[in-house]
Length: 378
Image 1 (cartoon, rainbow, N blue to C red):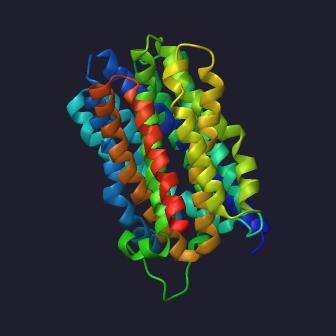
Image 2 (image 1 turned 90 degrees about the vertical axis):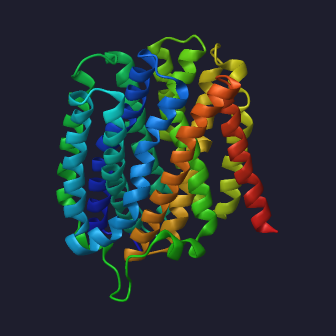
């Protein structure tokens, strides 16, 4: 399949839409974590509260293919976008920890819808010979918007209505590009039907495991890396920027990974990304209070997030139509499982082993992925 002008329009619209949602999503995680930390909430409770979002993803992702088939993927995405904007305002309207558990659960449901459908549009509209590079560009755009969220928190702070109003406004704007999506890009043969993760898992077990392990890293860093910085004596601005710099590697250096995906077996690139991430995370405790942390974080972001770039490229190479939406939904469910574990276990490791338990535990998780990939080859 080649990338036609109509497919290109879909790619541009999906990237434009996912950019603003990534911004809002990337801002919400550190914003809420820093607010709770400033109120004296413990690290493990912050992690548990953060886990409500991936729990929402778990509960709703299997519904997305069914809803997309019945109501149209574009209509479902627009509805989810509007709900997401009002949910962000809801954090300030119901400004207490108990309410945030429910609100984050609902946000996970709406966010999962946006990402599942956008990713299926991206990988489905990309040409077979350039899919790795296009997915890498998508990952870079998404990560750039993710990184802008924590950066903005560092600039405007965590007080008042401004962060929440700005986040909601950006999400509402992000609904506009969805009107330019071609609905037929998610169509499927008549015999194809929505399926659950248990139906899809035997078709791509390694990809799902890789996504789950990546999600542990993703959620733990998004929800707890700013807290990790503060517990090591860094101020709020620098702590928020730790997350931004981690994401910079994904913004600027995913294209080489996509280029490699188009030319070499994906399992080799996946193993290299996981091993590099595991080794470099072990150096973070020794460099967190020096400038050496910045280049390390860039490389960790490149290879750590690169695991998802490779997995998503493989998904697009192997599946089409509604089966691709099913695969994207299965990815979201695995992300939900991993993120749920990552948010909770990250807080537990910091509480039980001190702040440095966070990067060390993430290093061990990525090394498990390396071992799993080696075992799969034997």
